[in-house]
Image 1 (cartoon, rainbow, N blue to C red):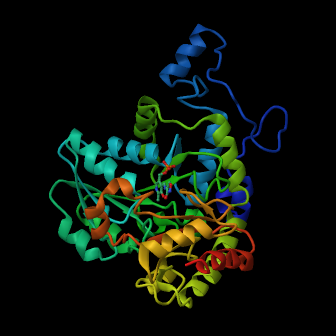
Image 2 (cartoon, rainbow, N blue to C red; image 1 turned 135 degrees about the horizontal axis):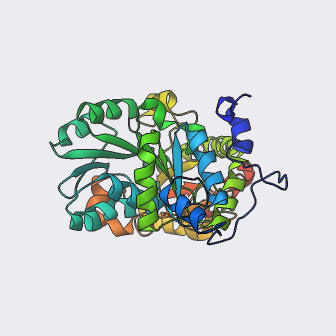
Image 3 (cartoon, helix red, strand yellow; image 1 turned 90 degrees about the vertical axis):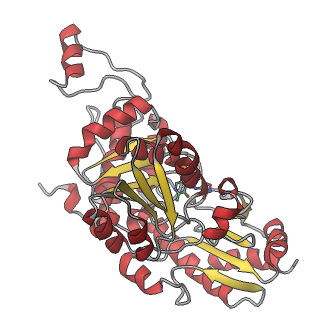
Length: 394
Ligand code: LCS
């Protein structure tokens, strides 16, 4: 029988990971249970020793969580995936599993703020050193490599600037140095970018965003390219403890069924809105990978299947004008997070990237006036009218 891995992406979204059960359920139900009973003492001992396969305790394994993990591993073309309680739990588990005291990480400077502060302020206390560079120029990665560099962590497109890094070039640099490449693929989802095809070793996602898509779950995932990494990661996630709940796993797995068609609509709407903004007389600049004005437009076409649903831009009168816009838009909601069906607007310097501090923001070109949009799947014309409402008040 043809394996689900050999089906089209659309079919995988609907079917990948679903487990058969004794009742013939069409989808994997919610196994909302913390612990599983053993047939007898010998059976319990066999499960713990690994002699026999089965479920023991939900922090270790659970059928609903596994269904989601299998679905994401298949969509990303990886061997295995591990669902975590948040995107940050995924990043932390990845870094703390791979690195030791004395190791060095190179990380994109335009990343989700807490990813930078996790490395800079917390992992540094455990002897893990980090260098933040503009990874959109691969030369910067090359120059930052040190004898103890073990991991390059790239977010592309980067939050919130949408700068794009060349995954193939960076994978080659990392591998020539015997370091690993991890990619935060949250902004793209497996629909728009497949980092393993370019040589990445690990992928993380905040499931909170496009994969779930409905602004009702916080979750994350680590995807492993190689099966040989699985036991090490499973053990460390079990011990760190940041696993995803069965109910949240069910919701994300449900969200993934419509991932492909949602991503298509996010991209179409974002393209229209980016073009509208770029021609707007009150707008200073727009960053969107689908515009020829984007500095890495050609790379985006090579590496990504679509521009994504995120836009950042700055108004002519900077932050003051941006505040008026944010307070007066219609349909758009002033909120952080992204990747849901509903459109959101927010201000990175005072919100998602406030924790980084001004110096790190300036280095990463996250200007005080930058406004970020997460484009939902509403009617594009009405979204433009909703923005125009805000512009008219400036
Ligand atoms: N990676 C990226 C690219 C993100 O944008 C986020 C969260 C995370 C990781 C962390 O995921 P979480 O723990 O929140 O599931 N980004 C957010 C943002 O831009 N606004 O609010 C959260």
